[in-house]
Image (tube, rainbow, N blue to C red; front, top):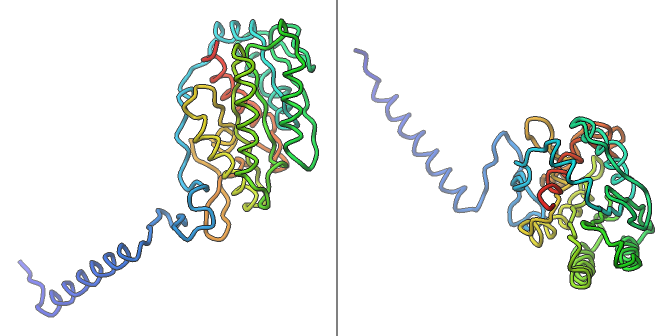
Length: 285
């Protein structure tokens, strides 16, 4: 049996002690170790409480399996969806594909009035002020006759509505106030809350979008009426999350396979978003 030389044993002991001291110093200094060399937010991050550094937990409806019977029952209800271009991608590309997969006729019409079962969708006003969309949705719902109110209603803001300069706290407060009023005034309508889809461009804008979305999750994730569109479009195959980095902080972005221009949904992205949406809606009927 061979034996290590005394000098070698001393060198090993010194090395071990050095590593222990280094680890202790890092812990005392408050450093966070990240796997695979990925940066992790610390207290010095620009948005330490708002930006997410780990995947958003999957919502309960993510485990819901779609089937023909559930979709057949869903299209017998009235559903109103206020949106712009990404919403149109979901309605025009995604939903028809999912319904076709299960052999169910997809019923939809574009209108401000809900006159028949299925999806009624409406393009909301678009200005430089995202609150114009909020006001338009509110105005449209309140103009509906009592007998023509939808069973389920929801709207979405778009990635063009939030940038790095947006006061996301104030915008969310306005959104929440409006939805609280609608829910109080129309108790028979199930209002669903939707996060803003992220894109693949400026990470600082995605950071602001995630600030808004974090508030949405905090307020509505446990309500049973919450659709995390941002999570759906940033979750690629294999459950990995697409992200960009800004000043060493990681923010979610749209999965590259889901878009042709970095923001709008292609067929694959629309299908993924529509599937996630339908998994929620079938739990509400």
